Length: 490
RNA sequence: CGGGGCGUGGCGCAGCCCGGUAGCGCGCCUGCUUUGGGAGCAGGAGGUCGCCGGUUCGAAUCCGGCCGCCCCGACCA
Image (cartoon, rainbow, N blue to C red; front, side, top):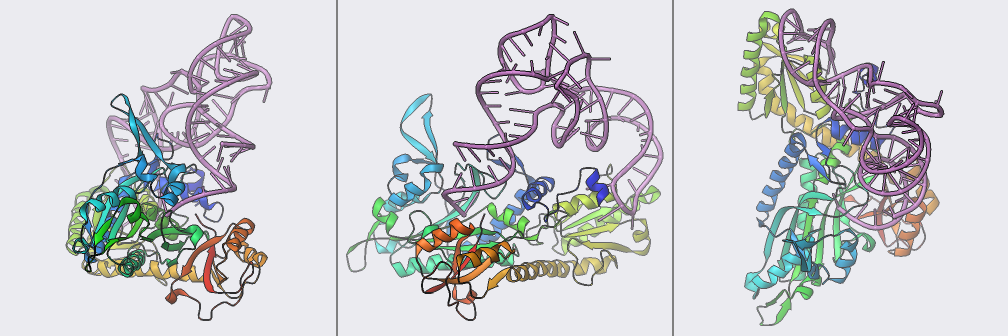
């Protein structure tokens, strides 16, 4: 495709410069654009449509697990943020603060929420008196602001969209179960919808959320071998409850502090999708997330024009009835080829071409964005056959993407003995993403490894993800008390 | 916050050394012809050369200051 490249329409190949590839692809696919405000982005319709599909799917899952949506305010009194010790320390450096309003300086500054634990638990404290008022299981869809120094579209922006769940429970066990339940929801969502299979498990203390007792996380492996923290679920213990007076009277009449959890995923997931499935042509959107799953491109040549357009509309309508989100690209000032390139760049899963030859024989030409093994680039099918087969075709594509991503994750994982920091560094330098090893639990080891290799413990994997035989050796020394996964991360 | 780079029509760039009519490609507009992998021809619109100051008869170009953005490192969904 040197021609396209020469015309300045190509993309830097992933292998040449992954980060340049990412920036170009996100913009060329019209997922997002830079805004005039430093570090913040505009999410364009194609990108926002993907986020909306994610939102809908997650929202349904939250409801199925007993949660309701609510909304808490954007501005939080500074004093609230300052109440929980670790929480302030974690967030202070990246707070945006409102000091003036209505033409006057405020008596107490407000922070633009970086996360809402403080204001939400202050409200819960007001609403809860008895164990009968528990649990509270709320979620909110909101924007938050963290004043990042180094930003990237979707992956790290000053303002981003997310969902944050906040729950309050009468017992520790119940809160713990909630945090784990949500971790499972996230994992299932990422696999089934984004076709991005994450590792899940516990965070080490150094990586946990500011103010949490423990954090669980989903860590996905990107094509460049770096890990992306794609979702977190925190068991907050009674840390916030104590600071905000979130107390209740138990069945036995005792006054007790409630147990909290909080959990979130953000528009970062869109970036994860790009870095999981994208190729040197552009973005690849899994069918379940695609705002348009099938793009019908009429090839309206000469006097066949009217007939071609009519068939295109008919096929689109039939696809719509079959439950396929379909769009007809009727723009007449672009050649078919230009449309093919554009939709491939944007990652639409399937293209349906209809030209005079197809109309004549009652057929269409179908091309998939990511061809399956053995399948040709284009298939000439009868109209009815193409329509009837489309839902299955999309499902097959969806699962092909998941399998491909899972295979890549495993192919780029090192499961074996790693006995020194140097060896760990060498393995990472060879292109391996996730390195499994033993760990004593000593935080000094983590620090030393990070300094030497830039890798951190991404997760202490859950049982089902651990290696068949537990690693005996620990890079950095000590006796192996658990298995951990190291990686360089975003 | 430290190091590097860049600011010139919407986008990508040349011009800057060596001061003298602001240019190229893509895109955009109009018309005609086109349409099975990035259409062709003809005509056209669009620029306080990041900002402020200085030098000069004359500054995109030389000098000083400021601002912004991008890339690379320390902190983070």
